[in-house]
Image (cartoon, rainbow, N blue to C red; front, side, top):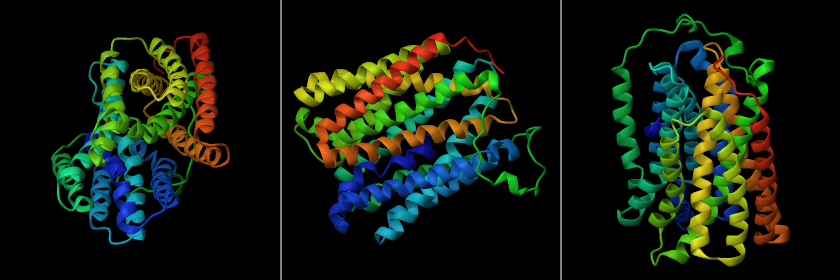
Length: 385
């Protein structure tokens, strides 16, 4: 998972270089990002349940092949159109890798400890998404021909991961379909929900993912400008570090929170997300680097705890027959959190200014996460389905 999702996030600090190289407008960058998200959402909707049908290992292998091919095409991209195709391929692979690898980590967990399996999943996901922009930024800063060479580590690691996975042999799960059996309903898009008694905690988890993805997306877009005020260096490495910083801190908080109960993680994480929105509003008006650091730490802690609790809730409410479908639904809601707020903030900033747009966004997110924390507090503790 770590190698696979690393390739999906690697291009983030390279976008300014693409703008200069191809003469792109900001709207073109938004379009490229939307193309990636379209691929990821399509993958989750159309391919998200394949791990339930055919086992996680074949899906993970194909996902790694696809993401490595997409990263290689990104390195060889000769035009905007070819780069967009590469981002769509990487988006499709992202959905396949996150669902199949998450299910694999859960199935291979012998301790039967849901929080441990969930921590491994969310930790690997955050670490991979953080390594991508960091490696891409460092390579782009100091290695010649950055739009080509920045992708080299991901291609090499992807090839090694593909080889390693083909050496792994696991028994087919009981729920997997027989080889060669493909039914139309396996490919049709579907939103999977748990049984009615478990839908409330699943809804809280999914909306929590929506909140974390949205808040992180806003921080990722603002962090480079604040980093420029705090350090005397500029360029892709600083941009990549500013994005990776939140995800590495999030991964650290998740690892530390492994012994904490799922409900406690959810309440504390959602509460921290509500607080971080007010801190970001204050940072926007004051431009104080110290206040920004405090808001980043609060965001990272909330991001980590909410994602850890969300994956744990999915593992608790899911059975072997619908685990990948529920995980796909959870991630679809999360990915929508990266699309809707970015489009909303962009529209508001065009009409009202960036500062007002951030205040409106943060106020709405604070209300949402505060309400979710209250709902999580009033929701009974769930045991594994």
